[in-house]
Figure (cartoon, rainbow, N blue to C red):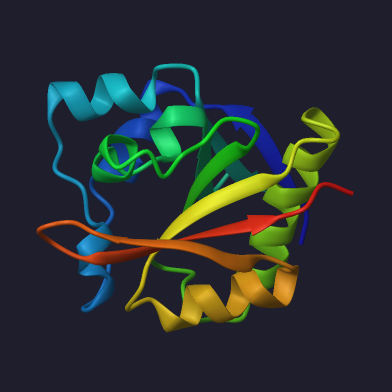
Length: 158
């Protein structure tokens, strides 16, 4: 399977906002609001499609990939490229996560040479944490919000 990156457009953003994940991953479900749509179209989100133009997932970079409480706690020191990602729930758990995430990491490494990548993941998401460690991320910081515990993980630049 081949994956391609496209700028996030309104059609893809609307699709992402109605994705529904099964528990406990429903934590990642979004609400469709005008504000959430504008967020997805702010220029920091990218769609990932397969060869038939099916939306495979998305990723974002910068502040859009940060948890607001982590910003308040000064968790996000400068010098990193923050990334966030989401895979189409129809494809989750089917063995494509490594290829999907590696594709995103490779793109960011090429675009932001010499800058390490950081991501934030909910601590309960053992499946994602295992995948990120397999790709070369290491645990860095932990922090709590009113809703969940989070871990930041970093990957040194190549």
